[in-house]
Length: 78
Image (tube, rainbow, N blue to C red; front, top):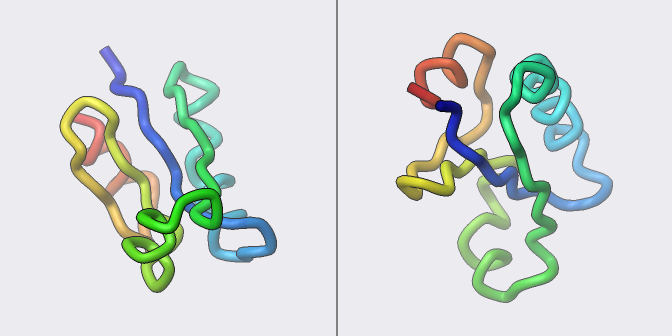
């Protein structure tokens, strides 16, 4: 079963848009990704401001920092 994930980013972030595009094939195969804007929480802003985009697994809390490619995402989801 594919875990659910969150993608931390913010509006106007070019790298976040690239990360979303990298994740699209996984989404098309059933991956659920919640897009979270770090400006909505001071905790997220403090934690991720210099790291976005960051992909986080909901089940384990494991995080994958940018840059990542399809093979790294596939390994991360196993």
